Amino acid sequence: MSVKEIAKNDFTRFVGTLIRTEKVFGVQAKGDRFDFAPLESAQDLRLDYDVTLQPPKKYFLPPAEVLLTYQVGGPYQSQLDGQEFILLGVHPYDMVAINQMDELFQQDNYDTHYMTRRHNATIIACDVAKPSDHVFASSMGTAVVKKGYDILLTDIGDSFVAEAATPKGEQLLAKAKGAAADAQALKKREDIWARNKKSLNKHELKCDPAYLPKVLAKAYKHPVWEEKAKTCFSCGSCNQVCPTCYCFNVQDDVNWDLKTGQRLREWDGCLLDGFTKVAPAHEFRKARADRFRHRLYRKATYVPQKLGGQIACVGCGRCVGACLPDIANPVNIYNRLIDDLGIG
Amino acid sequence: MAKPKIAIFDFACCEGCQLQIVNLEEEILSLLGVADVVEWREAMSEKSDEYDIAIIEGSITRMEDEERLKRIRGCAKVLIALGACAMTGGVNKLKNNFEDFEEVKKCVYGKAAGKPHLRTAVTKAVGEVVQVDYAVPGCPIDGKEFTYIVRSLLMGKKPEIPDYPVCVECKANGNPCLWQYDQVCLGPIIRAGCGARCPSNGFRCFGCRGYVDNPNVDAAKDVINRFGLNLDDLKTKMVLFGSKQEPTIYE
Ligand code: SF4
Ligand code: SF4
Ligand code: SF4
Ligand code: SF4
Ligand code: SF4
Image (cartoon, rainbow over all chains, first blue to last red; front, side, top):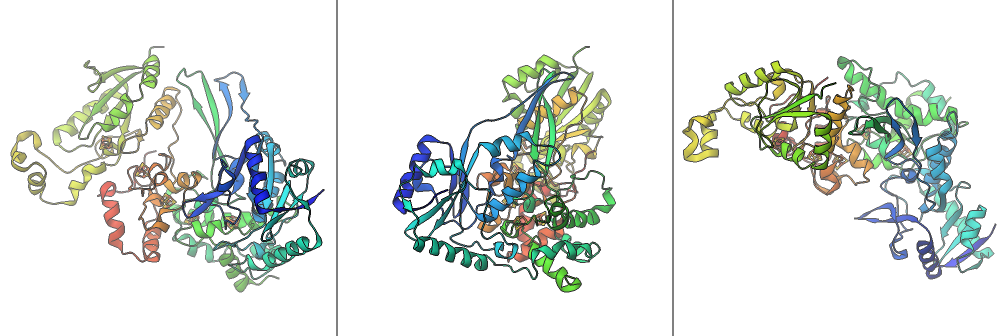
């Protein structure tokens, strides 16, 4: 597969070509923040972004979608949207999250809705140019990524190094003007990778993430859960902005004829009240702490069990910035447990 | 099977919620296809005393209204509180923050304050007078949510109204949090279901859908401190729809 060096203005022209021929979602400014949105003009693309408000998971698992339409007591019809698209500007930590979701949505029940969208996507990832306020990808081993994307971009100053990783990516990259990247360009890329492996670390985890399941194995009754949950709103913001949270809720809505209807799937979150509808009213506080604990166990115990040990927090830092009472930071909690319980 | 009969009644309110129903236009015709609307002052003039579903708009502010509401409850199999006024007392409960209602009346109505039809008592939500089976939150209600609830009931199914806060929908819409832009948003303690309409348009949630069942007020106080504000900054925001209220719980 080819590795090209593309001058910045040639890259802009390349993006312009993509927009004219394909459906492109790319990172753009949203007020003084950034987010993925339909890309109308190559000028709007902001690969110098720090972090997007929402992770790109919404393109594979939308906040709400119609799974099927049905006749009451009768047959049903699957609803699938089949449009191909390009996702432009996915950071390495988000790419790792997508790779994890890909595995999860193929396990047990193969999820046709997720996987159809995933197969329709061409992902152009890009290395981080500017760390966000709360990123800790370096701690989680997700500051650089080696698989999942079709093309990987690295900003090396006046140009991008663009590496194709799949035939789809190769085909796209053929449309960009640029020569094979030389040793100098590749060296610059190596340097950026080395830098990011250290510098995307606004919060520093005190152990190799591989030890986290061991730490948590001793932490179920630790006081930290009650302490933090005291000021938890159960607002689910930490779930909603997380690239590896994928819980959903399925609900039916019948039409006015009362004979036909649709089955909807919506994002849910383990922090939300009513997620487990069994909690009796007088146990609210305890239940809040249980839900709070569940998220941290899910990231570093339950999901890793399904993913050959991979930790399901990729260190994007979004939950840290989204939590108003500032209790969601996984590093703070894991470090506290490491201090109290050790990693052995 | 005969079509179920629906009756709509209003008490102290602005009738904005009924207007939301009238505005549904096409959907109203669909509703009339599956149910008979037997009493509805805003849209028709018939009177009837038998109905399967009574929909109550407005809050209860006079003794004679309590009697009327109890009569309605007696005739209805299912009773739905429509909108914030009915569900929680809504803005009408602002009055309950004052002790001297004569003063309040003078302030609101001026010289007319003494007229007999302006008699007033402590504002009550519908659920404080009779048993409420279902409630449609909001000021005004969301028309889509209303029709979803009615359809569910006609199907004999329990409608699912969110018991999670507005932040969930706000985040699903991809909004940055308004607290980071100096707005005291009540989203974290207010019931979702409006699609986070206000924060998605850049305006803080002022709580029209009422509290979630178990709002974490301690957390709200903590956040107020974190953002260098004082408790009054929060209280003044909560007074409009949260006056004299316990969290609303309808099973
Ligand atoms: S941890 Fe923070 S973001 Fe998560 S539910 Fe609790 S208050 Fe909301
Ligand atoms: S837990 Fe927080 S930091 Fe980790 S992946 Fe999720 S949102 Fe990002
Ligand atoms: S809830 Fe609001 S819109 Fe509805 S009747 Fe009351 S004041 Fe009017
Ligand atoms: S703006 Fe309001 S509703 Fe949205 S996340 Fe912030 S507090 Fe929640
Ligand atoms: S955001 Fe808040 S104030 Fe606005 S409609 Fe929703 S509940 Fe009401």
